[in-house]
Image (cartoon, rainbow, N blue to C red; front, top):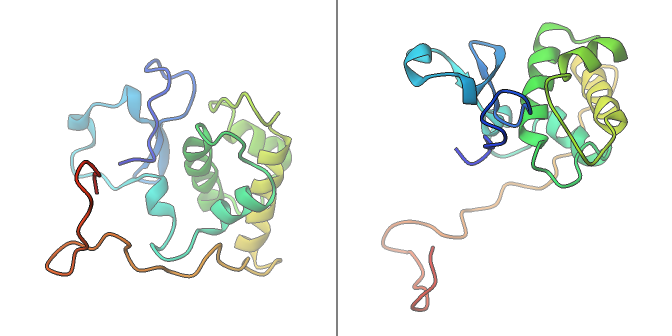
Length: 154
């Protein structure tokens, strides 16, 4: 998948965090044979395919992401926390994301984003409007596929 980032390959940055059977795990330290038959969710699996999940929208609206490299790992770790605890304290949020490194934000915006998403999970705040309406694939496959100029990859 595209969302799982290759960061340190040592399990120290959290960029590669995925949920395995609902538990956040570092994919760089996980062998494929260890997860055969497991339910694996990457950042792409957080949304319904047409609209962003509340945690994703809250990161966007509360400045929880700047360069974006670490964001997929934070989103997955945050969603795993909210799946287990929809009313986390700021300290519990900080503990849940302590294995994820960000060199841009200073973490306060990330914690604010998770708090906002938790309020949505609890029903205390309305779900934010989708970041965009679903769009058709601009590069469809099949007979109706538009032709591309030579040298341009699809």
